Image (cartoon, rainbow, N blue to C red):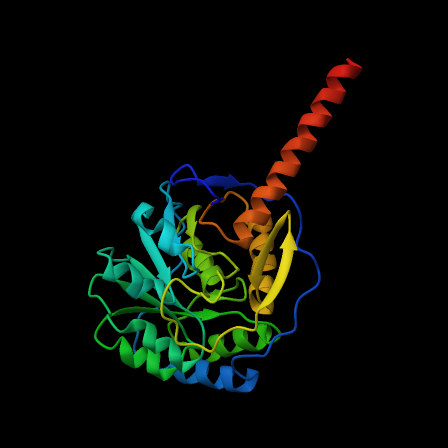
Length: 289
């Protein structure tokens, strides 16, 4: 977990301790359910190869690179193989790091603006719910299409893929933003050890991302947790809860979080609490013996 220490010492291993809290912030959908299904149906007809699940687990870690503000602190410590999302694609390429994969999941058309510099060495893993502008931006490049399972229309999505995707594309669940869906894609490709950069779930003042962002600004709220105050938003709070749930159920996986943000701070603090409880319990057992 990243925190206020120079990297790479700032990398810590997180072992999930607690289940996901049940409360979710209600947020506006980026695409109506019916429109999402219709777009997926149309995109099933695209002559693109599909992402395939790899059953052989990779032993090396993969760097999953998100676009939170802490990326400016940790990008020099990123190692290949690399999977990016959102603006991390151009951010790294501008600094001489070419990702192996890039993932898009958000259905809004502005996501195409994050692909100003498509690279011939990158494989683009694109959800079938993505906008036509995204597929147009990647014409002539290596694209693997996949299907995102989304509530509350998971059953409809499975039925749609069975009926309309002749290639039998894989359906992947995951969290509420593209950084979390990267974990699902990387898992499907065989990875079980994840170096996760810049999944901060918080902002630094007016800086919501590591660089230029083309979406609308998030509604910002201030919260205090484990002795620190963070600026975050409803969608980022949901993403933080999603990550905890993913790590809770992802058996056989290890997650290393890099950077200094709200999510890293919460998980580091929870782990410290759990270790202290274990120490106290061990001391009590010794006293009894």
